[in-house]
Length: 278
Image (cartoon, rainbow, N blue to C red; front, top):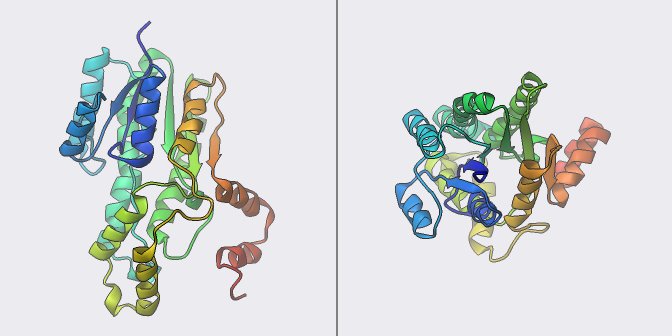
């Protein structure tokens, strides 16, 4: 029997890289993709099968799926949609172009890639589609408008896909991490500086404080877990004969999952605002 195969996005570092290396040691054939060819070369040098895949580039998605099919003879057991980014800023400072950019990567790209691999999974009669969501796919948080929008939508889209694939052996699954040790915050800061004209914002003073804290930060956040915590849930999602529809990772995700169900809206707002205001 040939090894099971999985296509993973966003493998240059963090969750994607940890998942790729761990699954390879478990006997999976891993296609570890990155947006930049330089990162792909580095992964190939480390013994992984890697080629370019950029959610913003439809041609790269088409080429990546064709590459997988050529290497496997037209099969793919699993897809892990992982690559994403955030643009942290106030709602009123989020420009149309910035909002469009994050939707293209975090949502439309996921849809495009998933739609391209589904025919292979239908033809072989099975598959796992794992979408990496977030605790912010369950609750909103200030200065996270764009990211929250994409993750709320991803939750709903995955629910719909699960209903549409009911009765098949293709399982759409969500993983919802909270704070994880990755380069995500560093990348978010870069995109903030690129997209947000913060010095002319009504929130200028708050932005300055946040940037100062970010630059002074030297350690992990409270409740932060390593990327391997996500990989552990991914393994269950991929290898269990009866995978769950959702997997929570980190204490905040579990707490918010409960709070969203049991607290009135105003009470949940108070919690998310850090106990401030009414």
